[in-house]
Image: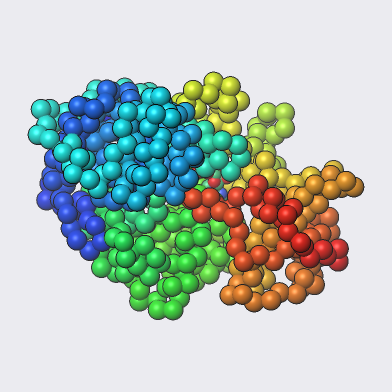
Length: 515
Ligand code: AMP
């Protein structure tokens, strides 16, 4: 089944329901969105063949949403990449996927046009804000989407590349459909009159969520140029009401800071889905205190989009005391339609309480890494996707993530999970952000170092941080070096880039503290 059929179904059931808005302006209802999608699909058919890859490297604009569905409708493979990437990073995705066209916006098209002639397969770089793009909306000869089997590729999702070059997780029409049905099943169909505010990049979680929210007949709100700050997003949720959104932890913390000043501004929010990176317990507790039970967690990765485990909003709302503490420290329960297991170092299933590699299988899992048989073979082993995350199940099936396997620090032969140390340091009221990494050391192999960003430019005493660690974790886990920074290096998706933290710390004059 072509996943674009989910849109045609909503257009049949609720043709006059609002479908697409830009800022506070309503642009299209569902029948109008379907028509625009079929028109653009027709135009795309004049410049690309079914199975061709098209890269989309642009900011969130209303045409982005139309383009996603039009490409799926036409049977093209869409390759959305973050518009905040450097041209050379987009070049990797264009060349690796062998894309024939790159769609962009007026701000980015100039830089990306330099790829023409550099990447053999690339025939055109098209600015969606130009008249040339509008000319691709033509009268459709056929409303029906291209015939697709479940296993046919639909979307290539380039992993964030916090280690090595980004790899293209190839997601089939069946995987996207499985993702959409699991979302509706586990978090509920959007309420009547609901909207989803796409402030997060459509190239990532927000774009994937657009599929179940289309199936659920919700209004897609693309923030206008003045709506992109936390205040702007809250302004939109107040305007449209019953608003859902996806937010990475960094932006969620900004929304919380903004909403804590005036609680009324959060009243238009139905649910904020958070995920994509660890949300520290301290931050989540503050978010729940300010926003109430309006938060739901999603743990997924490009290779198993939006769907490994999660916590629905009502579960945070109904838990209290120790149970709430355990829930906040976890990544929730296994999602519908997937099986999740923990494998020990011998590749055997680990029992509850024993940490190991999180592995996943189910229809939502990627088919392969595009053109990378070796990486595919080492990641999809025996039918299981090896996520690279270390996790542990408790007796009740609650999954907790300990860390990325590649980020474990080995100091004096002992394993230290940075996230455990980060949680402790973040419990200091003056610590805003923190990243714990291993630095090479002749004696210990690696020593533990903490890069700390104090809240609001405050000064923090090293002794206080060390005392906190001594109270809470084994002595060998406490940082031997602290570095105070104004900010941490982050990817275009707001993820802390540990490799860059290490290079930065190695080049810094530091505050050495051995306690
Ligand atoms: P990406 O493929 O870029 O979406 O990155 C996926 C990775 O982000 C996962 O493998 C996890 O390491 C991390 N991640 C995603 N969601 C969560 C979550 N809810 N809690 C903790 N880490 C997460």
